[in-house]
Length: 522
Ligand SMILES: *[C@@H]1O[C@H](CO)[C@@H](O)[C@H](O)[C@H]1NC(C)=O
Ligand SMILES: *[C@@H]1O[C@H](CO)[C@@H](O)[C@H](O)[C@H]1NC(C)=O
Ligand SMILES: *[C@@H]1O[C@H](CO)[C@@H](O)[C@H](O)[C@H]1NC(C)=O
Ligand SMILES: *[C@@H]1O[C@H](CO)[C@@H](O)[C@H](O)[C@H]1NC(C)=O
Ligand SMILES: *[C@@H]1O[C@H](CO)[C@@H](O)[C@H](O)[C@H]1NC(C)=O
Ligand SMILES: *[C@@H]1O[C@H](CO)[C@@H](O)[C@H](O)[C@H]1NC(C)=O
Ligand SMILES: *[C@@H]1O[C@H](CO)[C@@H](O)[C@H](O)[C@H]1NC(C)=O
Ligand SMILES: *[C@@H]1O[C@H](CO)[C@@H](O)[C@H](O)[C@H]1NC(C)=O
Ligand SMILES: *[C@@H]1O[C@H](CO)[C@@H](O)[C@H](O)[C@H]1NC(C)=O
Ligand SMILES: *[C@@H]1O[C@H](CO)[C@@H](O)[C@H](O)[C@H]1NC(C)=O
Ligand SMILES: *[C@@H]1O[C@H](CO)[C@@H](O)[C@H](O)[C@H]1NC(C)=O
Ligand SMILES: *[C@@H]1O[C@H](CO)[C@@H](O)[C@H](O)[C@H]1NC(C)=O
Image (tube, rainbow, N blue to C red; front, side, top):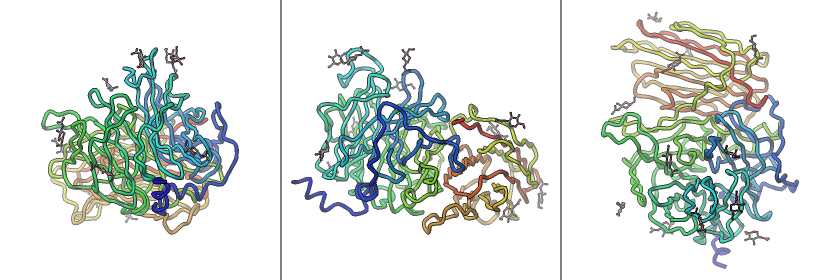
């Protein structure tokens, strides 16, 4: 009864409402075998993960098993190309780029429930008591959503995360709320620590547990950063500091995803570097920092006890409308990223998100230059369909940009005259700005699918890396100090890249390499 009263007063915009409103399919869900998919469609990314078919959203349960295999689970509707009927899909990879689809890992108990987002931990010390005979025990901690409320459940695995058994004592955490979700658990000393969103109260709850079964409320972090309409998918993780001036080589960061109501519209992830002492988190300063200047990077999660993360490369404003449904699937993940913090002095602490080692997927080298100053290079994709470019720039010591200097990159289609454009503007009077523009493509039109994004830096960029992957573009400036992720839907594949610089000051240098990327699904 208490739960029902809460349900009636729930916010109409909640994810729960959207899900129940939009999932109508009753097709059977395959068990014990991977869902089959066709990865040949023109919009299919070849190096970013996308589900075999159906609809995917948040990455879940990210962990690396004892054999070094990376596991990616994800919010999954296997029976429709819109959100709803939430399961945990599953894929594994040796390198975070080449994925093998696995059987669905977690199923809702019935058609009115959903297995919502959560995380996975490895329990080598058997703190949970589930693992009398092994040191590779795996426990998933996730939200079970029902029409009445959202409770936290756990399930354990004896086979490195391929199959799970729900705990008979579920739920392990129930506060009677229908807006209480997305537990992310880490180890701190002898304790487990969970962060979880009281989504519509703008509170991140911190809970502790000795055994993953009994959870004690430790503290709340509330009303920080942008509120949007709801808080979701928090992460609280300790990652390396690369340039510590104090001798501390690790630091904590809290991430909070908000939806809708992001500054650019829809959903986005913000982060807060700070101090954590096992029960309480305090941000280092009052700043709100965004993890991406594009619109398509949400609900990012860190792999358990690793500084590697992956985000969902879409936006709730249009995720159910994008044209990939004609190929039977919707949504892809971002590239994997290696994360660390830097002490930026007066700007405080900043998160750097480097592209995770891309070497394993480089294929043909398409262009190479040590001198791209004031010239433009035309690069044909040849037999490659996804392409990576890497540019390093140096400037003379006492540089002043009296004129408008520019770096541009434009991807074009063969005959439909569509383009994805981007570049970097350096001037004497305004800041140094990375920009992208997906507006000159014709595969998707919707008012909230906005076209242009940009971000400014204090100092001119010294490195720009970009990846076009069919329907997804990502740019990483200065090794991931500034990251932009945008979906793009041309009616024909991109087949060439024009990349160059102009009006750079005397004494500048520019090196460029362009690579075709392997088709990881071939
Ligand atoms: C992990 O490696 C061990 C030892 O080589 C092997 O017995 C086990 O089957 C492997 N597990 C998985 C999930 O590959
Ligand atoms: C579906 O499962 C949930 C969670 O176990 C339970 O609360 C609910 O009563 C079930 N609904 C039906 C119709 O069986
Ligand atoms: C694991 O925990 C269970 C339950 O507490 C216990 O029976 C078992 O002995 C433990 N095994 C080890 C190796 O600690
Ligand atoms: C380990 O113990 C569990 C629980 O008793 C059992 O189900 C499982 O089969 C055992 N695994 C092995 C490899 O013996
Ligand atoms: C933590 O936040 C939740 C959600 O707003 C609230 O119900 C609870 O009372 C708070 N706990 C404390 C100790 O402030
Ligand atoms: C953690 O910080 C809180 C708030 O400052 C404090 O009350 C608590 O005693 C601290 N815990 C430890 C173990 O230092
Ligand atoms: C986390 O990983 C480090 C190695 O990077 C290891 O030393 C440590 O034991 C791990 N911690 C846990 C809780 O698994
Ligand atoms: C850390 O690196 C940033 C970016 O390169 C730089 O701005 C900052 O001064 C460095 N901080 C220290 C303490 O070296
Ligand atoms: C692409 O073409 C190049 C040269 O034309 C060739 O060396 C390479 O093997 C081809 N790659 C693939 C994947 O077909
Ligand atoms: C880059 O693009 C801008 C905007 O279209 C243009 O003004 C500038 O001349 C271009 N620079 C080069 C080197 O092509
Ligand atoms: C690039 O062009 C600008 C303006 O046209 C010129 O001033 C500068 O000397 C050129 N840079 C180099 C390195 O030649
Ligand atoms: C750019 O610099 C990085 C090292 O900072 C290097 O690994 C990379 O190969 C360089 N790329 C080009 C195109 O020079």
